[in-house]
Length: 492
Image (cartoon, rainbow, N blue to C red; front, side, top):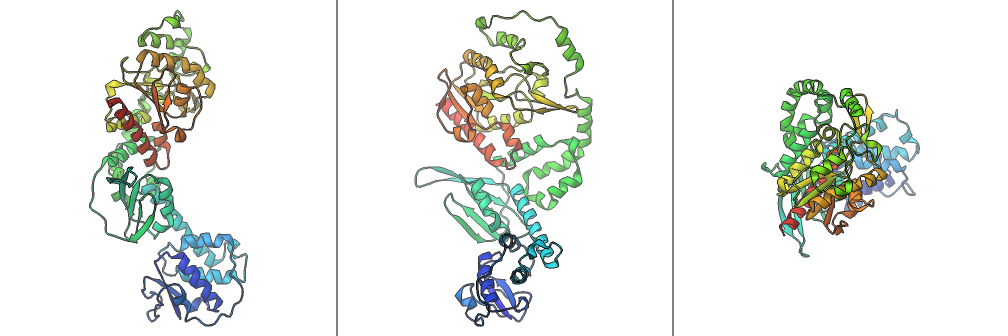
């Protein structure tokens, strides 16, 4: 029996090197074992581990009896990358068995009914599921900041996670791509991974650190409560996607019992409330009501006159299906103007901007950024709700470029009347309304953009993007940073 020692339990490269040497030496699958960190394999109590996984590990092997290079289908290495992360103690031997058989049966990976292949595929599926949970349930907490040698400030975050398998090395690159701009550490019982903006490091596993609270904890709770829909609650499906084993490390999990308990009463309240679609009586009243005398738009000199004029706008077809126009709200002397895309379902019914789920996120971030709500004018690039009816629901549709351009006169008039010192544009539609051109927010963030009036404009993400993003931490952080930047500019 030959036993090979690997550097760590998911050491694919070490296994690959020793498996190749074992095959060339003519070793059968039942003649090899693998262990890690110098520990004997549980599969053979009498096997003596071989130190290292390089030349020392293969020096004692018999002379090569198989000639030529090992060849495997492309799918084998992808399968191996996943399987080595599993906690199955036989994973390396199983991989070697599959490797061995592939040399005589090139089409083995297509034979789904093969018992060995079936077992390997099931192991890989468990790894992919565990990796999906890691991406979904890692929650970072801010622990500090550091100044780099170039003078830049980098925020430092840490997260505790308990995976079912050894997937930290497998998914580390995902977190590097997603959170490149911040320093972070993900701590687990098996391995820990650390990123400092330049280098990725792995260290041994550790015990769970002491619990601590930060601003992101409240943000996760606010976000989760805002997207929780009692009408679509299925407890069994929720627990399948969000198993209870992860709850103890999720800040939003403490809300789940109460949200589930109150779901039925909230759903009843939703049914009793006004329907989402405009009431027919409301629409008929608007159709038969005499038209208000048209205002001379050139003589509009106040926000109240502008709101009155907006009520009679028929410049584009969006006014037809909408319940009402949604003008901007705020003080006429506000220092900051925040421009969104268009009213949503709840804004259309209320007649005020940013009162729905995206508005809840925006108001929370405004407070977190230290901005004064009384010194902000909230409005949208498009003043009517564009939607597609689906049953009793109205599904949001993005306004077209010509609709934004048609409504641009009203936005320009709001800017002229309020004369803000600074404008924040939320999303691409808002930026088109402000500049007359289409731009990607990812590129526009950080650029010096000026409105035609000379007022500086900060381009950032819309809070609805935070709600629908698969991983909302990054867009939320960037939106907060831009609001904090707005606060700093106004203070200066």
